[in-house]
Image 1 (tube, rainbow, N blue to C red):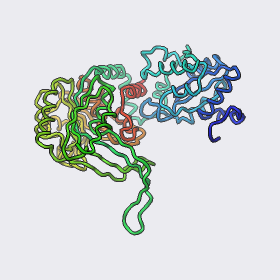
Image 2: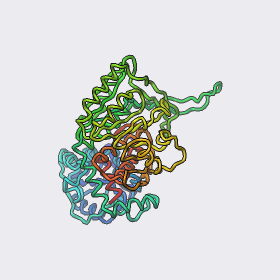
Image 3: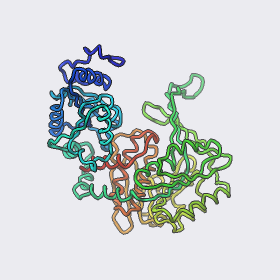
Length: 526
């Protein structure tokens, strides 16, 4: 059916007796609900993921149906399930069909929004029903129940909580379905049975009052979506057809956005170009608790990394840098160094995201490692503009270092050692640092802490959309937890969950936030 159905053409909206006949678009179900209300019927709505249909769901939906004449169930679309890596186990269509097979469910619609609020406003149910787990506001990580209640009441309805037997889909999935490889399941089981969930949640909550100083390079990431068409007939050139573009605040700004929901305050020290600065765009991309202290590089643009991307797989075809990565003019460098020096001791944590694009001179490094910071976390990155020149060894000391395996190998000129040896030797022979994490993509990460044993933590990512910025997200969140004194095996685990969430995000469309992380960890360890 095309277009919005009208109230005068309801014949096509009558279920045909088969479960699939109950599954309609949200627009179609909204028309049905309008007609039912006009006929004096009471409409009841339930909403959820329903990844693994179980007795608790059945009892909940059955009780909901008794509150009215028609039960509509809206199902969270796959991109918004947000219950951790490997979820949903079943796609939205399969979940909708399972629900539609229940006799007391009248209609099912897949909701293509991150929460139920828009669906409630569209359907305007007389009663919106949730399970008793949501009755206690403290158990609502997202804070959405309040918004859902308001949406229901705006439409003239009310919210109701059923009091039926409850089960956890996440717990059942973890116990009975092989979502992960055996070594990953073993690692999760060890955390689960050793009280890891409570300790990890407590660790994450412990940093909510922290103030963080973030020093790093300003980068604008552009994605230009182009469709490859083939080689031109007269030259060895691949032609592409332009479609669209997205612009993201990357570099130190993306790092700040990841941090913002975990701690009280973030201040960013960086440098923008005085031509094509993107200053207004950058400010608009930062949350209210992020303060920007930006100096100007004269006669230069803010660094732009323009990637040409095949949208079908979000695969990068080639990229262009628009930048001036020469050392800053002396006066500007003095201003940057003075700002760092004056602020260094005022924060619980100082994080350095050094992309090697000219912000941090040797004078800056001397100030950062000079002992004024309560806790110093460092990451340096090698990229096509500085390969082999921007090594972590330029920082003689730090309290925490997080770096990926290829960059560790470059810094140590070591091509063959295993990652656990790289971490240990980097911390003891190359940089004075008690805590080091070496990440290595699909293989997870290894952690090292002086005087303790190292850990290898597996990766949890099942769906990789885009890897850009995953290491930065891992670094800044784990730096925060390291500053709080968290154990390295827990920090490595949390970092890998952060990485798994980040690789499902295109570019920097949104940050990995605290709520998403908590829901994912609970989903993994229930």
